[in-house]
Structures are given as C-alpha cells and as structure tokens.
Length: 454
Image (tube, rainbow, N blue to C red; front, side, top):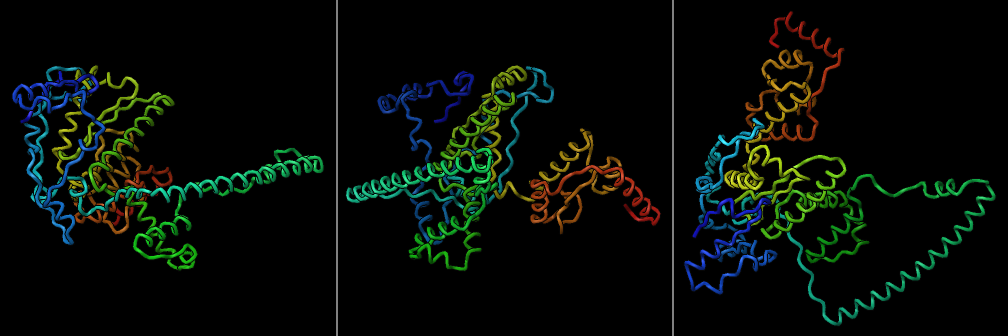
C-alpha cells in the first residue's frame, strides 16, 4: 500500500504532523487494531527503525570466501518518484520576484547503467565495493566480579599513588617559589622575567603529525589482534618505522574518507556531524551576522537517514517571501532530485563528470580574477584571447597533462590530476604585473614575426 501526502500533512518546519495514514490503515483493516501503534507513541530513537536486515542469501554471500551478493529486491523505480511528485514546481531563482505563474516539472531521471541496476544497493558500503570500509569498534567483553574487584584495587592504588605525587609536586613548587623570591632580591628583576626564562621552551606542535609513540601503539594493537605478542621495547628496536608510520597514516585517512560498514553507523555519523555543523553555523552567525541555509538529504532511495534542514536566524522567511514556497518544499524537491541521480562514488568521478567539474572550476576562477561575468574561456587562442586581452594567466598546470580543453582530455588519470590541482589551489589564476604584460607582448610579436601560430 502506498500513500501520497499533501502539504497539509507537514508543518512550517517540514515536520510530519499528520497521523492520517495510521487512521486509514485501521479503517481498511480492522484486524490490525491494537497492533499498529499511535504516531505519537512510536520510539523514533529505536535503531531498528533505521536498519535494513540482510536476507539469508546476502548473509551467506558475505560470510563466504568469494562473496558475490545477489541482486537486491526490486524497489520503486526512480522515474516513478518523479512521476508521482505531489509538490508544485519552484520558480526560477534568477528572477528574484515572487510569481505564481512559473511552473517547472521535475528534471527527468537519468538512465542508470546496467551494472548499477544489478548491483546490491542495500547500503552505501555495498554500493561502493571498491572503497575502503570503516570497521565499527567491537564492544569490550563483560567483566566478571573478580575482574571488577581487581580493577577496583588497582584504581585505589593508582589514586593513592597520584595523591602522593601531587603532594610531592606541591612541596617542590613551594621550594621553587621561595628560590624565585630569593633571585628577585639578588638580581633586582621582576617575577615575569624569571618566569619567561623558565617557561621559554614549549613541547606543543602547531600541527598534528604522526609521532613515534602513536605509530608504535598502532602497530602493537595490530600485532595483538593478529595473535603475535611483541612488547613495546621490542617494537622500539624494530627498524620498520617508516612502514609503521605509513600504515598509521593510511589508517587515519581511512577513518576520514572511508565508507561506513552498515547503515546504522552511517546514520549515527550523520546525526552527530549535522548537530555539530548546526551549532557551529549558529555560533558563526552570532559572531559575524551572516545568513545561511543547510540541507541534508539522503543520496539513495535505500538510505535510512532522515532529511533535515536548518536556517540561520530568520533565513526560512526568505523562501516564502521570494519564492512563495516554504523551505520544506525545497527540501523534498532536493531529496527527489538526489535519489534520481542513482550514482555511487566511482560514477561521481567518471570521465564525463570530472570534465564538467574542471570546466566549471576554470570558468569560475576566471570570472573571479577578472570581475567579468560574461567572460568565456578560450583554450585554442589562450595566449591572445585570455592572457593578452585580460592580463591574467594560469599558474601550476599539472606536469604531464597537455594544455587543452578539459572536454578533450581522454584519460581519467589526467583529468583527475587536473581536478585535484585545482582543488588544492596549486593550479590557479593570477594577474600579470606591468613588466610581465610587456614581456608577454614582445613574446607574441616575436612569434607573429616568425609567422608561428599562437
């Protein structure tokens, strides 16, 4: 049974407030009375609501040595989502004028490739089999009463030892204070001068780097998990420090850009991160008086996250004042568009997609450096139509990549190298100085005199 909701089923904040579907369900099937809970009595914090259980075939495929997951259960095609869109079309944002006559239909869903249609899409991990996986932490085992008693004894001994240490440090500080006072009278200086001399050295680092102690602890953990028993002293004597440092850096990178192993871990990460982003945005608005809007939606129809939106200060009034639509309508349209993209991480970085990204990044940089919004990039006559005309040039074009229109670059490695250089700002637009303009003009004259193509 499928149910379509109208705009009256949601409040101004985009929250679902109607219990009509539960009432209709009880009306159609009276035998379910007493089994279907009230909408207000549902525990939305229950993790089971956000989990998709695996089938027996999928579990067997995962546990086997050569996993080959079966095809997933057919779901509603993405084209049906766009076809059953109950929300009105949004006006053109470029007009900046409220209008009731603008009506656009949802963008047609692109045809997904055959391998993607047959792939397992039960989770983001299964949809991206070539990506590294962030393994969730295994909960510690339950302690017995004897182990708890032993830990209590150790804890008490540690407390007593730390108390003794604090008392000794306090005595030392008192003696140091008396000696500093004696130095003040002997050398006729201020206490600040002596304290600056004592505390002139610092052990803090400006950036967090892989240190030897962290590398050794990480290697020790891997050895213990593998069944080997190496002491810390033995690990310090090993000469494979560079390999251990590389392994630790790969582990840290995997925690940042890896994909979660299951949907529950992904939901928890999204909730924690969005809460942090919302707090940072609100604090930033108080400090700088900026405005901003945050949309967080799922990227696939099988994702179990709950879409959310947040407007800083009174940003939500903008959508109704300018477009005459509540912000919740934009959230739903955005979610439908994202679900119709039907792409995993590898397809996001396809040759065609990265070509478009690079062309857009070049044009945006050129507009920013020249201040001209109607400018166009000319790769064929770059020296005359761009450098000579606007007195700007590209710095840091990647070595080994031919200077050409990105749409003509045919290898995925070269286009990725160019895209990464633009993102890292090692390839960027710069303005020519007056001396560089004269040198470039004389260079062009030399080429023209020799009848060379520029």
